[in-house]
Image (cartoon, rainbow, N blue to C red):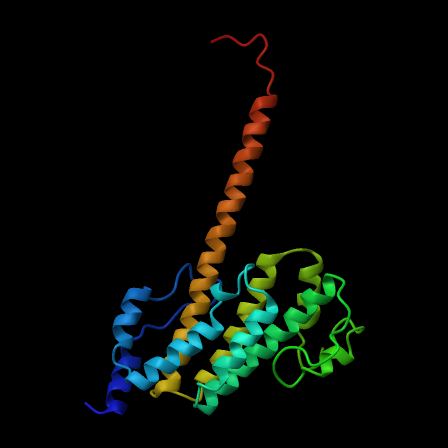
Amino acid sequence: MSKQDAYIALMCSLPGSERLFVARQPPLSRIRLDRRLTALTPEDSKVLKILEHALSWSAYDMDVTDAQAIERCKQAMVDIPQPTLRKLFMERMELRSAVAALRLRKRGEPAPSGPFGVGRWSRHIPANWGDPSFRLERLMPWIKEATQLLENEDPLGLERLLLSISHKQLKRHAARHMFDFEAVAIYVLIWNIFDRWAQSSAAEAAKRFEKLAQQAMADFADVDFEGASA
């Protein structure tokens, strides 16, 4: 089977997904997805692994600094030859760079003395540090909402916003690729977004349950049982 035919068969075997934030889980398990991805050539498989690792949501949790995340992605950029994947990669990095700058400023840090982050706005952001949206509100209309979510210390709300933006970016690129490697890579990145939200929602639900349970126990302890009979 030719590479083209193999990739057509691969894409046809991948199920569609429900709307983001409506679906409770990705459309198929990671084990089943990985089985299908064995149809990739070794070269494409390597690129996909690099891309997934560089854009992994779990790889950017609290124990990874923004500077470390940005440096990791700079190193990965040279290993991604496909123009579409390079473009969507850079879009994601520009988003993360802007959010990293918002976090840095919220901590009270001064403007970086040199370029900050990755992409077109690495010099623009430090030069407009004092502006609430870094003067990027027309190009990044979501930045005002992100700022408010940071101020409100709402990490789940911020993650939902960033996942939504990333999902829209990927869907836009997906419309131009149907049965090639880029289509496969975009599908996997969208799968990762669904998986990340499923994990975030589950973790948040567990926290809410624990909080409610603790409150219920506290209320139970406050009940006056004096005079009650068994």
